[in-house]
Image (tube, rainbow over the protein chains, first blue to last red):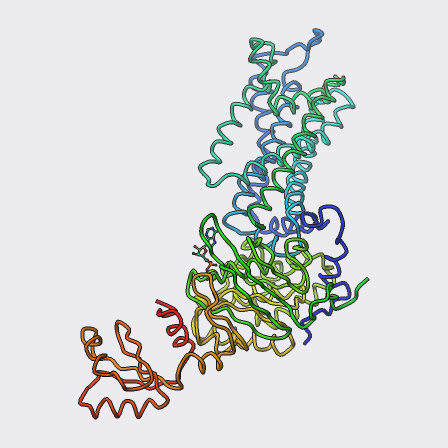
Length: 281
Length: 320
Ligand SMILES: Nc1ncnc2c1ncn2[C@@H]1O[C@H](COP(=O)(O)OP(=O)(O)O)[C@@H](O)[C@H]1O
Ligand SMILES: [Mg+2]
């Protein structure tokens, strides 16, 4: 039996090919291998948890959109056109579920892998770099966000809640939103030391869900409060998806998109830095 | 494209796999590894022997390029880990002190994913995994979840995982700590086989028998420093006598009896529970003791071991 270097393309040859390239110590160009690990893990994971990410926004839609919506009737948009209540909250629920899925993956799952499963420790003792790990993990959150978004759209479109062809853009928008939240979420999680601190993340997320213009327009708030809420990521997410599903496509959308691009970049930066400090210093 | 062996990229001797000069690691004010020097040659089994806290794991992590040194020089296959971490890690197999297998995955999936982290192709890995499972004697556990394995099996799987990239150097941090004797022997046997095929082994242990069995050459570490270096036989020859006579007079009497034992053997070591008499001929020493009218409760003549070397060098036993 030969145990040394029989591979045509040895691990060493593969690693040496990146020599001299920019960021060779941080990135091996293989985030997909980290993603793949999650595919294997999914096969033996709890499918109920996976499924709940899909049904949750649908339940909210039924309860609030149709149940509560009956009492409310409809609401009107800025130019006075009536919108069914369910069509108003559906995009907000999609944005929220993209956020929740991404945050769940990037906080609880990542924290567990980091501190108990020692998954990242093992990954970083191979020729992978911290940026591969960060991108692979975040990519996973995105894939999940994508599947949920497609599922949700498949339910709400036949209900007539998508009022424009622009609505198709809600799917990539949901992925962008998941990307932003996963990236920042993983960055924050990498600084947390115990599960207790993670409760703060939840403490922040529920009010954000309730008050970010999910169920009603921000015009009910005084100006100062409105400004604060408009600066929060979930508001940005809701406004983006709502713009697409209701077909109000204007310059504000560019702002919302940029907001998430910045979140993604900052999140990746901090995560990579922190993984390096934790496992390679 | 390089096909098989990695080229050694600078002009240091290709026979030297690892060179450490004044290697130091500090955590804040605490010096965990204190300016150690050593070299590991190709194909040898090199040991770091020392008690808990000696700095063995810290040294291993610096070699594995997952911990940056605070000072000194370190070269692995001619490369500096500070500059070429991922490249060096591609040369190495790592078996950490605490298993970090992926508990969510099955046995074969652990090997597959780990191989993919190195960028190896899955078609190639499929045959490799069969080979490794056979080597680790885990063929029948292929589809078992990792958490269901026994301690010895987990250890063997971690070793198999460390071999997936066909490393030139396999790093084993306390490979048999916590295993029962049978599991240890199976593991030792596997490590011998690796040595036979030319894998360089770096092993830490606080078991002297393990060091004697496995290591061609070793350093004795204590408190971050290297106390001595050599083959097990050389170390014993230099720092101990051929035989050791262990006598017990009961815990309260050992101290007083030690005075009367002066002059018997080359050297005495008084431990709380027994007295060690270092001598070329243990039976002869025992005869002298009995002739002098002393009556130990128990007596035992044995060959000198690395434990004695450690005791001599540090005044302490390895495992307390
Ligand atoms: N990350 C760390 N931060 C602070 N001290 C550490 C850290 N890692 C190890 N040490 C300390 O360094 C010393 C050497 O540890 P280690 O290398 O694990 O010893 P060994 O493996 O020989 O038992 C110990 O006193 C340990 O407490
Ligand atoms: Mg240790």
